Image 1 (cartoon, rainbow, N blue to C red):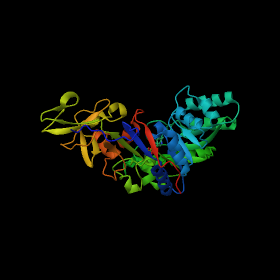
Image 2: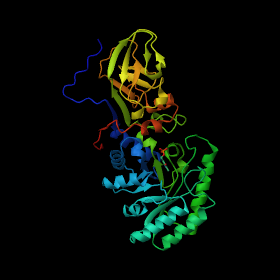
Image 3: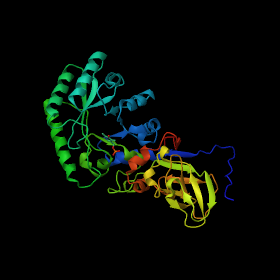
Image 4: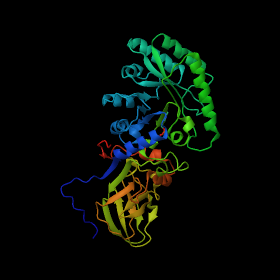
Length: 391
Ligand SMILES: *Cc1c(COP(=O)(O)O)cnc(C)c1O
């Protein structure tokens, strides 16, 4: 039978693990710095470092020369400070009533996109009565998401300068974000860049003296040197994932995927032809075959949209999720092969051992690789490898 477990030799074998290669992360940071040699680098570590684990990744990025860390929410930034990280940290996703005072006391750079936010940060600075709040004014140069419109920019700049004169804030940055940097040649790129220059020039003419001006995300950092300014804000590329297949593969940019998702086969069994597989019986075996049970599911972040399409490397061969991905598990048709229970099932990794990549899963699920890595759930332990800083 096929039900012999691999010898365990007293070592606990995990159901599944996300292996995080910190040497790859450090190398990616160095590669990105070389790509933008005249600019400082911010490693964006929001959303638990895109699912890779925030604090270990933040430390590795700093070791490799990142000067800044970036988060979306204030709580993410506070977690960096709580871990003892003293590097410049910027966070940009604020809502009314947010923890501005705590942000001031933690020495965060806080993104300000609207007058209401400026008013709240000024009130918090007054209450704190000590150091001025470090704020970075965000321009909406065309993304149509967060940021101050060109029409409202003069009022925001004027109010920020008044607060600076009162010693309550220091405007440390002027910044914006691209809509289509991952679509080479998209006309919005040049339009946003022109508007950014105009909005920066306006603010500086009024007397703003920013430490940093920045607009580049990963795709802009990789492909548009004219967007680098003083600082580049790289997220997905730090983790070795390409922002889009259209601009190239990770290897095209000298980047190496940091996360490998590896599960331990929970069962291998023979079934006859005509056997339905998983909920809804959307897969039915064509002949006598073997089925392998991969013990991760949508609760672990494996997209249910990859039912019938998600790839996994088992015993040197690509297999495909047979039928539906369930909450905790999915099944593959092993075509008669009989790997032992406990054999490795590699869902994705760098790809150089023949395994699928996060991009392959994105394609299988009709999404982007950002979503694949960020959604790997907390039930999957992160196992850090190559943690020691290299030369
Ligand atoms: C997430 C984010 C980034 C990083 O984008 P990547 O495409 O992952 O490099 C940069 N800036 C802002 C404002 C972001 O929200």
